[in-house]
Length: 169
Image (cartoon, rainbow, N blue to C red; front, side, top):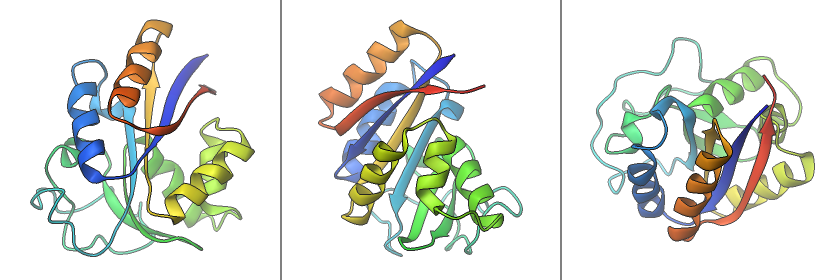
């Protein structure tokens, strides 16, 4: 059983720096990001990609997808999360949220996070942090050594509510 390290950032700059530090350690496909889509994303970078995986989003991809460091992540796109609003998601969380939304699964974000192995009480806490403007980052760790290094990067970048969760295969 592998682990994911999950944390909440308060700014896109925190997310960008953490992703830059994580890239030599883990493949981009192992990094998930969920950030509020304010409709304007100039601080994240220029638009680089043109669409998310076909049929994967519940909302339209607004003007393409953000670029910069976040734009390098896999499966990036915009979606609407019931009760939370518009978000930009990347990585495995994009697929989890898109599947939950497409299947009209009750619980939206909480259900998707629980499906990723996050305990329900933590998933609800993360949802509340996102409601108040937080940015969620989850990183797959293939070993205990990588999990520690990932946690160290998130802590160094002042992420909050950092936890390790077991991922089911």
